[in-house]
Length: 58
Length: 230
Image (cartoon, rainbow over all chains, first blue to last red; front, side, top):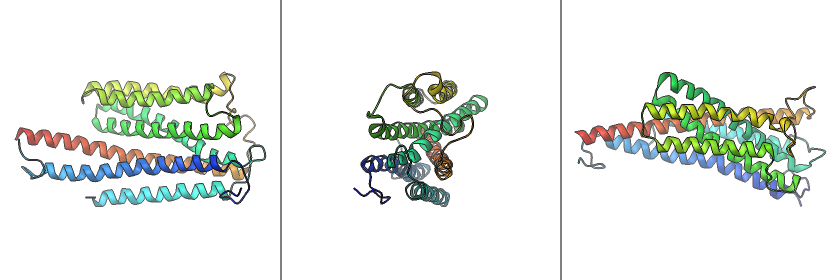
């Protein structure tokens, strides 16, 4: 079985599993933070406008 | 809606992420095969830097907690909370990659070994910190309680480090910081050190990025409260 380094190994599934998990964790958390940042910026802008349409006055 | 400041932060994150990818390529193509473990040892280039970043996060959490106790500021608490989240992320990644490495090497996914158990305890402590933060209302008592727990979490790191020498364990003893120096090949050693530096930098970026979100959420809460009063 050829692995990504071109060297035959039985360890390939484990290496792929570990690095896929690593990529998912590092990218996933950053992506979640980014989506949250966009949402928060929108909400802060909406709330800072007095009596805005987004959040009507109570 | 993203500001110019957010964009600069994202560029920095993208550069650090590219450095992580570059390090992974070095782990696959530059580092030689280990004569004892074969190819599977390449998981160590992710596992060890993740562990170091998790431990560095707990040190940073202790620093932010001390600052929080001194200044009584929500800013330090936001940094501490973001650090606990990032610390938990890297601790779970350490446990998961260690488990994946353990299956072909030790023949088991998990064992209640001293190093593994104390690292699992670190993950539980980070969870406890986040639960405490979520359970308490904002104010000086939350800053104080979280700060005390944040300092206590750091106490687990020396126990994790010394666990392989204090108890009989399946986990190997320290292979970098050992008497007589490391026996690793220079290519392996430097690839590992590079990975530690890059992942710690990426972890620091994640902490900064996330803590600004927490501060924004605080601003939103304050602004919403002001609007309710008008």
